Amino acid sequence: MENLTNINDPQRLYDELKTDFDSVKKNLDIFFLVVVACIIYFMQCGFALLECGAVRSKNTTNILIKNLLDSCIGGLSYWIFGYAFAFGPEGNAFISWKHFASEGMDPDGYAHWFFHFVFAATAATIVSGAVAERCDFIAYFAYSIAITGFVYPVASHWAWDEKGWLYQGVTFNETMGNETVEVNVGFQDFAGSTVVHLLGGASSLVAAFILGPRIGRFEDGYPVEIKGHSVPLTAIGGFILTFGFFAFNGGSQGAISNAGDGGAVCLSMVNTVISGSFGAITALILKKMGIFGRDRKWSILVTINGALTGMVSICAGCNVVYPWGAAVTGAIGGLTFLLWSHLILKCKIDDPLDAVAVHMGGGIWGTIAVPIFMAPEKDGSNPGILFDISSRAPWMRFGWNVAGMVSIFVWAFGISAIMWLILRLLKLHRVSEEIETKGLDIPKHGEPAYPAEAYGHGWETKGSALKELAGKSMSETMFGDKTASVRKRVSQRMESDKMMENPEAHAIFKSDQERSDRNSSGPSDGHVNAALDTSQL
Image (tube, rainbow, N blue to C red; front, side, top):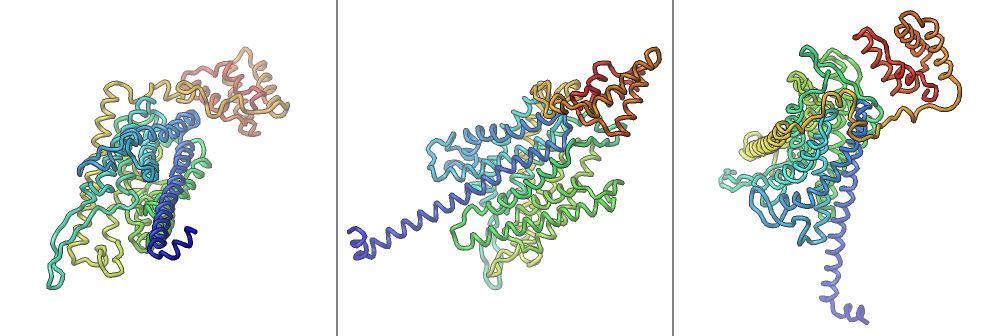
């Protein structure tokens, strides 16, 4: 009967339908934000695998737990005070101050909280790669809390909250024909080239500088390559990150139910693919040409970082540039990565993951590129410098973007420098030389990623033959230089027959071999037995 009454009352029916329609639109936007935020959250797995493969096996557990805790610590700090500083309804142009621990928050706003939480966690994770293999756990806790709870929230308030000074922009008068009109230009950083990536890169730069390089990274002023232990893990991590960037950039539209939302999301994703592809190919070819260094190889690691730099570069303008503009942005992004990576090494700063080159270098170029390549609206308004070089507005937008970029860099660099200098004065910034040399996994966590006892099998195959060879060699040289003979014979057998299947045992043996060469004494019997134990081969 109620439906029949509504049919007879068109106004009431219209109001109810409008209410239902508005509710569906609102829920659709919430669902969109939650889904893309979940995909962005999966980038934490990508960062974990990328960093895991790029470090030595003895530090694998350490880098994994730090990536996991970036999410956990970030969740706590961003919930307690980070979101309130960024998007609280009360505040000024510098900072907000309401909704601490989500107090008084409308449940419909939780999707917005979740979306920006995963952005904050991303900014913190960038730093973990730059301080890998020597950062103390206490220092890690400090910088993770600082970035997710204060540094990133304040910067995101400036750029993305309607009260923020960068968001409000600058207003000026411009003459158009016979009219003088008032024009406002704001900070253009759609998906965080500056707010997320430059901020994380600047924090990484100061952290890596104050921590100092890993032991053995530079000798006589020249860089010495320290290889990671797994290219496959790094490659899988790179694939996951490129996948996550589609949601990172496309999801920054923030809604999907309004006219034009779908087109903006698709354009952002297409530009992300194009910019990342051009960044990867450019970096790969330039590496092969030997422009930066003598190692002329088709490097997968350089290709991955080139792709990520291209995607970082397009974050700022992925929704407002033509695809050809994304191609140019990505190509220059690939070049930017190699330039910054080369410069960082020249400055003798050790950045194991090239986090500064990828995120800070890509973020700087991407923020500058937006006002240059920005496509005009359908009515011809808001053109980039390439489309209207004579007007004042594009140049003002360029200047405002540079001002915002410099401000956020100084903010992130300054706060991070204060924090790391305090940690250094308290001697809490770096692990001891012994722990760094032997690895962080066992003394810090008691959980090696690749325990030696987990390798091998119970069948008497190659392992027994190798051990018999070692025993024979020991008996033959009982009264001679037995350790040198054992080392030589076993090494020859391992290399010729490729019998050493245990990487941890092989590492122990090689370490003792190198120490023996320096000290003129052979490996200990315990280490020889560990290297030749048939139960682990």
